[in-house]
Image 1 (cartoon, rainbow, N blue to C red):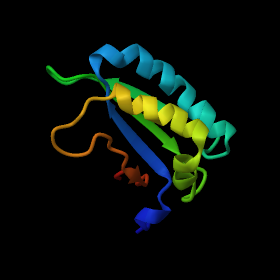
Image 2: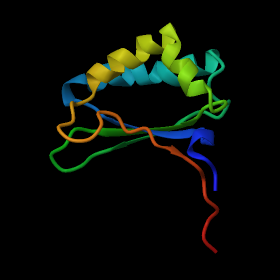
Image 3: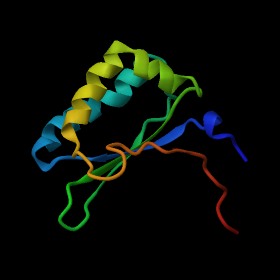
Length: 113
C-alpha cells in the first residue's frame, strides 16, 4: 500500500456559490496552466467534472497530479498560486460542518477482473 504522503493525484472538490460561478470558472481556467508553468504538476491536463445535488450549489471536481509529493507545499508558498487559491476560496460556500475544501490525495487501483 502506498503511503498517504507519497500520493500525488488529488481530487479537488469545490462547492461553488451560485453567485460566484463565472468568477470561479475564470479562476479555474488559470489554475492548471499556472501550476504547470511553475513546474508543480505533470503534463497530463486535469480532468474536470461539474455536478449538481438537489437544492445545493454546483460541485466541481478537478482531478490532477502533482509532479512530486513536495509540490503541494511549494504551491502553498508560491504567491502566483496564492493569487488564484485565495479568490477561489471566496467563490465556494462556507460549510457548516466539515472542511470548506475537500482535497483527498488518491491512488488509482487496478480494475476488478
